[in-house]
Length: 109
Image (tube, rainbow, N blue to C red):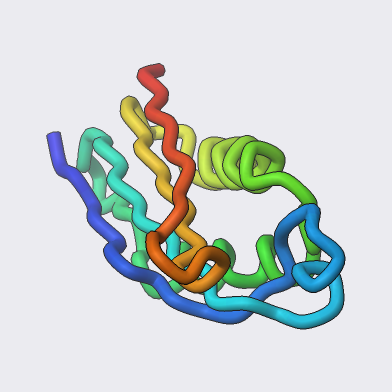
């Protein structure tokens, strides 16, 4: 069993409910952990996966972190059906002045 880690994937995106969150992009951080069986040279290309994550979040302009997290899970599992465990976390470090807010989930297949 192999586990791929993408940590602190940082980019700008429009995501959130508040009026000012809909007007301008804010910093978003995605962390991913995915376990899979490596065989027959079927690997997960972390560079391509990172690009897909950024593209999905930036293009969709989600209002809820929950929606973004579930969309990421669907996209990743569709692209990489060999995954047996997926853990995702989306953080918005600049939305509140005194803390970093985040949402995470973990799935087992």
